[in-house]
Length: 189
Image (tube, rainbow, N blue to C red; front, side, top):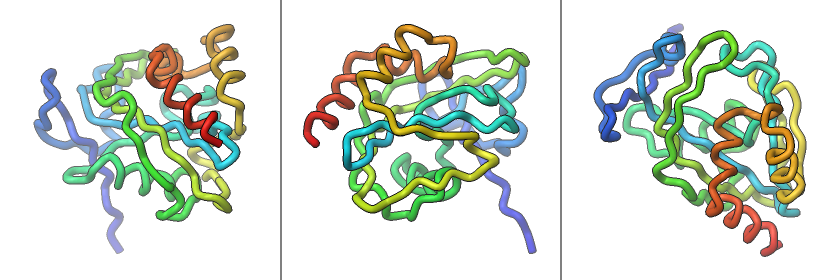
């Protein structure tokens, strides 16, 4: 039996794919620029899923963050990667999402955690709607705990205590277009 190595797609400064590397070797103190994605998942009640990263995570262990993040594999669309990570990280079925909307297509960031590990990602941000009757059952090695939050209350918490949340989430939620998209989806319910 062989275990498939998860690959991360490396990028140049102009957003072109320039190769791949095993995910396990990419996140270091000298992390290369690579492709990723962030998601904000809304349930049918319009609540936003926030997760606390597992304490075993290499970067930002125990930090509250957006619903889910990940890396698209070679030749994998972000939508397909989001569905895959929904299964692998949150215990969802592959068809759990009603729609996947790209809200911040050009988002990128570079951040250094307390241990010196760097995240440097071209990371489009997506808003995802969860189908009725779907339940999140996160995997322990990915998520320590999770909460469903009213969007405005989450925004207020991020604004008041940004140090409690991941730096990418704080930065992403500083974009008015993301907040607006989340609130419009919430109001639609």
